[in-house]
Length: 501
Figure (cartoon, rainbow, N blue to C red):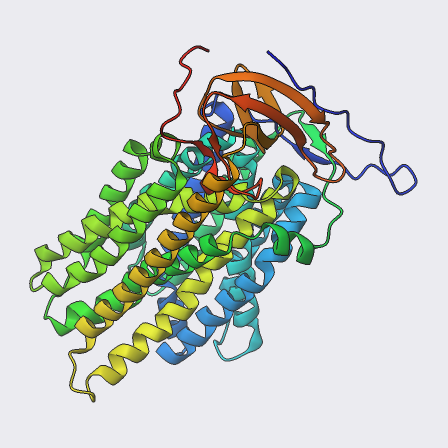
């Protein structure tokens, strides 16, 4: 058995200035006290966000209409997307803990700052909305990056999914609390005050979760453009955009869709959606590890399209439970492996950028999908088509096309890797090798039997170059030409798996 020792961290450059970033090394134990404190922090923040789903009440209170509401919220989303990549790079340079705490402080300030507004027609409300949306992006991006640094790659999707389960709880909690607070002339102020205090409570839990001594690593010296060019998982970003496009539709169009059918309540949909999503997120949290990232992502895409088509069956309120169950299942299933696939495509020291990149793709999907769906509804009637059925079919078709592109990409990967692995010696880029298990950029692969292994080149932490390990295996490994392709991180199904530890 061969163990590869990590190469020591190189001396600081730039005249001895230490530019290392605090991180936590992966541990086999995922659910410790720190993880649950981080989940508590995310629960508080997600509850604050759910309370402010009634943002339209503020706009109406300040004398605005749906037009102003659309411009303000849209401007905030554009600002959030624009700043995400810069936030990702900042996380990699200064550490997830720092950006997480700063983002929480800014989010709390943005909530309290809305209390000072006197009009919705000036620049102040636009700036506050940009701060609000950007700080939310910083909170969730840094929390996912922090969690990803503490778990092995094979369990990253599981950890992200379990962390995100608090969001479904907050969806129910925040809306229920919002209903209780939304009475009387001063209810808008109460919502923002309570949201601000929930954010401060989340900041307290974040401080507890991330406190303590951690190891450090040197941030990558490569430019953002170079990192994005070499490591961006383009197909995964397309999948992320399609996912955001679908998941953003109910919040925007469900009210008008149900009104057209004469349905006066949406509780059937959102209540069932949240419960199903929470149960599936917990129950299926280890699906990505058991079946691989790609199959789970593909199943989620199929369910997203099916959920949209299920709206065609709705005629009464209780029938909203059908698309709610399917879309809730899809949401819980597809989000964690998609985030994990993007994050694992980047070197460990650049995981913040990888996380922010896929979150930006989700936002782009919402930003593009919402006006596209609105245009379809608007122009279907004059064309002699049923507006909402046409919209649901069209959007489901776009998801179907995305799924076909994803499948074609996987088939191409399989063909390429099968051809490259017909050699007697299997060459794989590995960061560690222990207990007959290869770890690719921190991601566990399935076990296999190896005849001989030899170390050809030591890892270089300054240039992100991994170790080169040559192994003669009893069965070929299925590895993509790119060392950082998480979708290819599994063994050939015909390879016997070594059950010994």
